[in-house]
Image 1 (cartoon, rainbow, N blue to C red):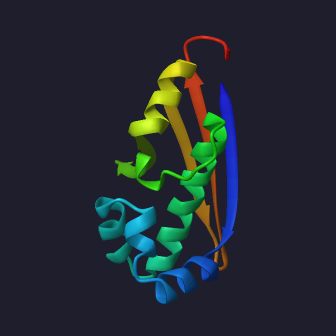
Image 2: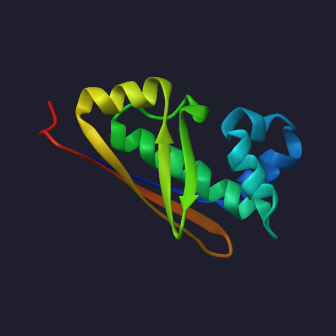
Length: 123
């Protein structure tokens, strides 16, 4: 039903985290922030989740401005997304039954692909 991709420089997110104390609160749920902050290189994990949120917004055709409405969670090995609010409403309107995510990061870049799968053709 929809596909989205996003690529971001990890140091861009790292600078945002350093310069703007509320950046993490504004863009990530408490669970996401806790997870990322617990890792050896938090900026890398924040960046890939930021890319995932952007990719989800693109896959839904709405862009991403409601950062807390798409939460990236890890269930076992594969990341998944929990949608709420306007993102969930849009997904329901589209007939979305599943959001598939693929996340990756290298030394300097983070990328995400989101695919929204549904039961009916896009209207």
